[in-house]
Image 1 (cartoon, rainbow, N blue to C red):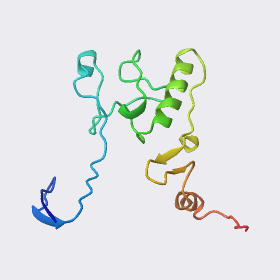
Image 2 (image 1 turned 120 degrees about the horizontal axis):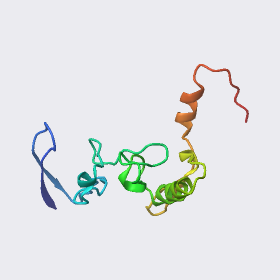
Image 3 (image 1 turned 30 degrees about the horizontal axis):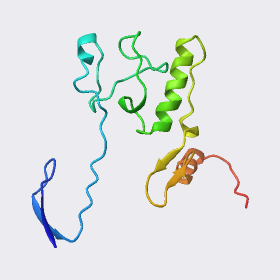
Image 4 (image 1 turned 120 degrees about the vertical axis):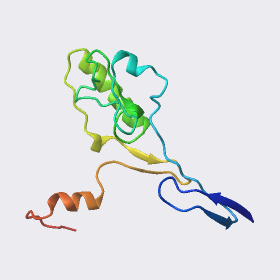
Length: 135
């Protein structure tokens, strides 16, 4: 048996937990601190991410950003697709990425992966529209 003192991040109360196992899931943050971005005029949003336009340009048009430092899921698959699309745009090509086609994965045992929207998201999109269900 192990005792842990847990302190709420904002507005909560402190409490002591007595348990056999404690799983801590803290999330991820973009690594943008200490890069000197402010020295070249790149702005950050309130979550520490770099805002970009549809061509992945930052607030400094000659500097581009992709992957974990911009909005969206922090997935290697997403960053890889963004990198390819970004460079194609720099070379004069079209810039378009369909995030519904980027696979997502949870590295558990067994692993779980999916592509596209959830059933709930699709139902919300067609709510109020005429559609039929076939099985």
